[in-house]
Every structure is written in C-alpha cells, then in structure tokens.
Length: 114
Image (cartoon, rainbow, N blue to C red; front, side, top):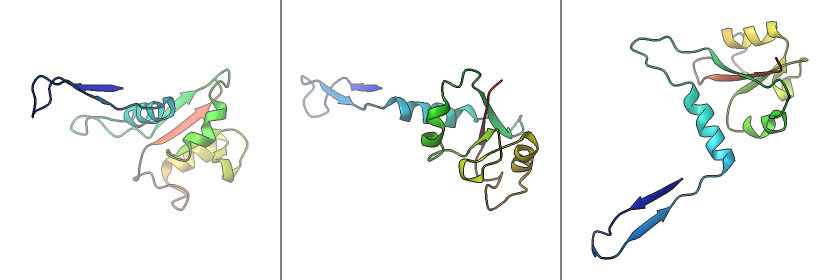
C-alpha cells in the first residue's frame, strides 16, 4: 500500500511521497478482520467467518494467524491448537467456554477442509 501526498505544505514545488508498506501477512489479517464487518442497524452480528480450505493450502498459516485472530479449526479435539469436532465448535460459538473465548469479544474464524 502506497500513500502519495501531492505537495508539501511548506514548499509547493517539492513532492513528498510517503511509503507505507504492508506485508502479505498484515494485509491478510486486515482482510480477515474486515470480513466480519456488518451494519448493526439492519443486520445481526455474524457468529463467525467460515474459511474453507479444501486443499489445505493455508493450513501452515493458521498458527501464525492465531496469534492475532481467534481461529478455531474443525478436526480432532486439541485445545492447544483450538481445534475440535463440529459439536465443540458449536459450543465455542454459543459461548460455553468463556475462558477460551467469549462470543462478545470479537468474531471467530473457523477453518475446515470441505
């Protein structure tokens, strides 16, 4: 992402270019974060974002993304990696594990191989 300011305020003849570079990781986190935005005046808050990954191309990024986003994965139960069967994920959405995650904090992200 590059932001360009046309002219400096002090000297209109001198161009100023402000470079703000985002990494792929930062862009991905921002995109996932904005995926859950909604208009509270006419919509109910989504319970989560379902991220399907049939070929498991993104699987290696999940631990890194989980450092910044609440990500839960469909799979065998493993509390350390925040993964579990469908019934466990439904309990997470319902807020049955407030120490693990409160549904009122932030939207959850769910990954699965479909």
